Amino acid sequence: VGAKIRSYLSSRYEWKEGMKELCIELRDAGILMAAFSNYPAQWAPLVEDAVALSTCVPWGYISGERGHRKPSAEAFEGALAAVGCSPDEVVFVDDSRTNVEAAQALGIPSIRFESEPLLRTALKDFITW
Image 1 (tube, rainbow, N blue to C red):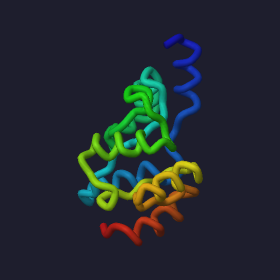
Image 2: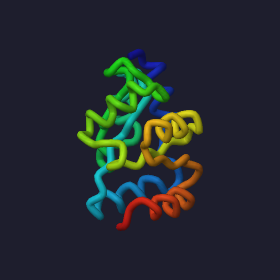
Image 3: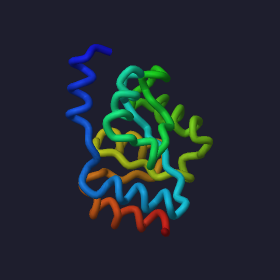
Image 4: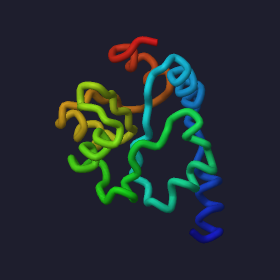
């Protein structure tokens, strides 16, 4: 990956307000999480360098490494296989309405991300911490 792309990604990626703290809180409470990304394979390490995502949420499925992108059923099936879970054992969170609707169509409980406070409230319908 070229220097311009590396610089661009480093400057563009940051945690959404309150999300790093929420992820740390969930991690410390023993809630298992995994990142399900549509990134090209070569971008994931750059995003990791920019925000250190895996310190809170381990990478579970990177579309660019697997060949299927959200919202395809194959991507969701691959992500579930990668984390060893069935649809009723996870909660999918994404900011894309299309991705959330695709997950729900596969029986995966889902929340559309809009903000940390709204996500925190919505998660309480699915998990306790």
